[in-house]
Length: 203
Image 1 (tube, rainbow, N blue to C red):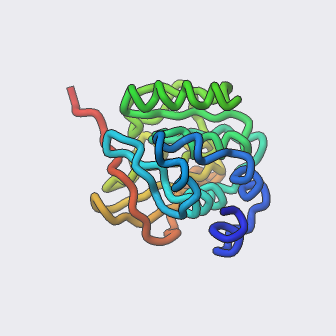
Image 2 (image 1 turned 120 degrees about the vertical axis):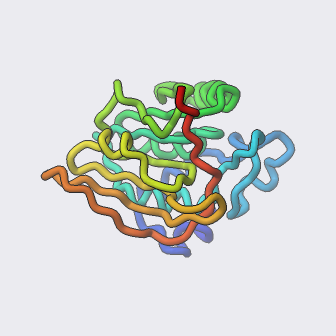
């Protein structure tokens, strides 16, 4: 997977490639799907959610330009695969998952695999994790129609966020950067398809 799906398709960050070599993707898929774990495609994990295509996760992690001193937030933890990878590249990793059963399963799985330092809570990912902010990097693993303002405000100066933005089935993967001056810019990394980013209903 690392050689053919990632390196051969343009992933150059050696730390990202090394992380993919260290995290067993088969441990994050549903029982019975282990033989498909290293296919370069998303896989269903139940409740209408997926574990993302490895190459797309690698693109997102590389775009975040992660450093060992960074504090990272993932919105949409799902199986826990992406945050496990990210945790090998940063100093602290936090995750928010809307579905309690997925959050509980990810927490148990990550602890069993030795990623117990990752903090995960159940909640509305569009509001981020204000008490733990600011974050040097935010990884959004679900697609919304716009960039949530709360997540932008939780970016540290010099921080980066990758987020799919668009319709229900097709989105544009955006890199959102906050300059040291506070100015926020966006650039496109290309088309993607993610499950929807669903905020909690008001009230």
